Image (cartoon, rainbow, N blue to C red; front, side, top):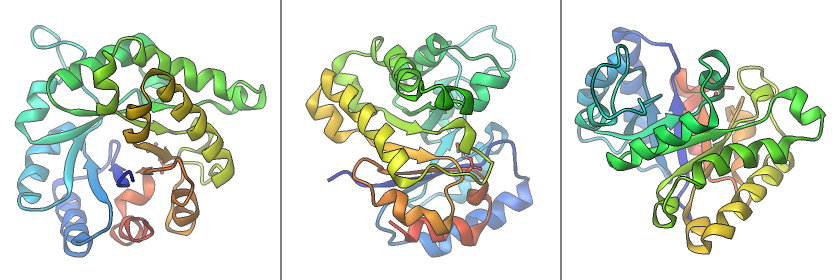
Length: 248
Ligand code: 13P
């Protein structure tokens, strides 16, 4: 049985004061939760959040990582740096990075490899746009995104990733995939993992992301292949995030 994971993606939100309040609230109430809990915070706040999460079961994550190991790459943050702040997870290939910053499937694959090489767990995001869904291309799009990563990974490393299915049309829109729609895509993704390794497919968590809220989290996470959530807006409110965690 895969343990579920609820991860907050704070995106470019927060301040020293707001982060402290948010983490204090989450920490106080999430002890003893039945799932793994993580927060993926903006890079400048890693040190703050690391120290606020000492002795807490809540894991720390980042939202992006460089494909390069180190060197003259102005503005980039390396996987080794993230590890120094006790990051356990890093999101790679979020649709906002793909669409606003031109990240290609190949770059996402390189970032995934770099994260794994440093001992981070990459949360590899895939998802189709509304136009792609309406054109019946959902499966083809998400499989192409996943395959770009899988073809670079040694088979033994496949079980070390987390996948997040985030339909672009559901992100920040309040429009969520129905549990059945999401399950259908999750099953396709798991089937592809199984073609490489049955054991890995049984182990890899596949999260759903896109307007997951307290009122739809339970039914989404009840689906067979949905192993948790990657939460945007609702991760910025203590009560909402905790309510989602409690639905597991
Ligand atoms: P929302 O929950 O705000 O739709 O964002 C989802 C997301 O992009 C998480 O990575």
